[in-house]
Length: 158
Image (tube, rainbow, N blue to C red):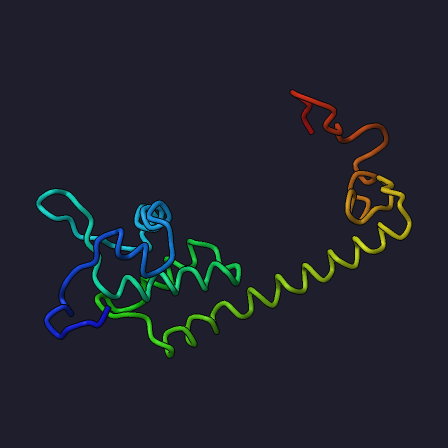
């Protein structure tokens, strides 16, 4: 639907924001409860969102898709001037802050994948040498005897 100049200050209902962003109303409520979105309330206590909420929702979804935790997304959104949509320049600045964290996660996952491949190759799942079950033989340094309970049903603990 085309936007008329007089509509620029019109607030979006939660249904409109959900429909236009492709995000369920329940997710929008969740974002609001967690400080990622702000709504205004009508006299009838209905939520209304400024138009910049569309860009903010898109920003949240893309950030989540690349694995950024919600607390970091909130911090990023809090760093933006109020009443302004995130711009391409904002995204570049914020994504640069997250790059090191993502690179570290990638290295960690690659290491885990290498350990998993090795484990699949030998099939041992040895508690003394398996880098997945007992990295660096931590349990062996704690002494002899059982150190961990394997889950065998309800109530089992580790």
